[in-house]
Image (cartoon, rainbow, N blue to C red; front, side, top):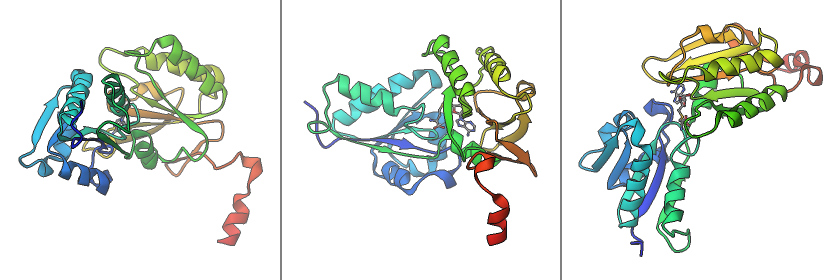
Length: 262
Ligand code: SAH
């Protein structure tokens, strides 16, 4: 039977700069007796860790870390499981709930669980590029480690055809280099090759880098584990080094009128 004094905070730490960590996330970390997370993200809050119990580990042990955090909380500890960006977006919130449910947890009978939202890579990266997400968009992860490539490919084609702005998470790693090339081919088959693309590396981190380019050129840029790409739709444009997707399709609203009124 679960020890009900335990609590599990699933904490978002934002893109990697303390200015984008929410007060609620900081309060949860302050309250926690145990903090569990990947080393790089623990570093971001290192000044707050004091004499708390810390469980850090490398990238590959993500699920193990998640299981440990859940178990400690069910044993009665206040635990903060921290994750970069938003913990619920390609993060640990899903696996954490799965582990809890698997052990018989329900919201009524089990320990308290709180998901604390945060600034995800796509909004962080969009803010650096300008305003590329002001119309319908979707996010697609190119990682086929846990998702079959056929599923990812189907989504890329559907999103490209439907004229969504597309944010690509996990575009490339040392070993996974082909997916972004396949994605580019799909975009080229249904969009103008000069459609704007933002390639954003390490947003709000020390090595932050923004490149505004286009579909034809996107794969000539530095792309790695800390990169998110934002591929524009048919209306997206770059002007004054700023990538913008208008709020509506151009024949539906009149910027001249808005300028006159201001
Ligand atoms: N939960 C995270 C996403 C984890 S998936 C979030 O909400 O942001 C990891 C992928 O996120 C990376 O491969 C990269 O595509 C993207 N990413 C995470 N942090 C980033 C940053 N600071 N700058 C650019 N992309 C980032």
